[in-house]
Length: 143
Image (cartoon, rainbow, N blue to C red):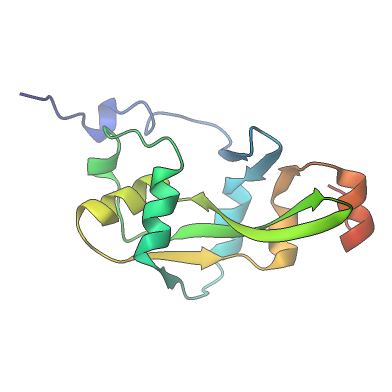
């Protein structure tokens, strides 16, 4: 019989300090604490398509011991991401916060909601990104 890990014994719940999200082998580092502060402005979350929820969960490391005690009603966060490629800046979206909550929503067969940062907010939360000079030249901001 598997032993259920409680929130007080969970290694993820016990972590303290600044929370970040690493993307593309640490090429991007996002400040999750600042992102959460920004989206606490009263904006409404949007429902994330179930295929996108599944993709987000399947494309990261999810600690299955953490999933049972997270609250899937707390929205995740999606950021814009800007990446230099072939002399151009390619833009997309990346799911940066809420992977465990999204996994819990999938387990419960419930919808999952997210807050979407705008482009400027997405730049604000970047701690590190590739080619900062190229990005700065394109969007007028230094990272």
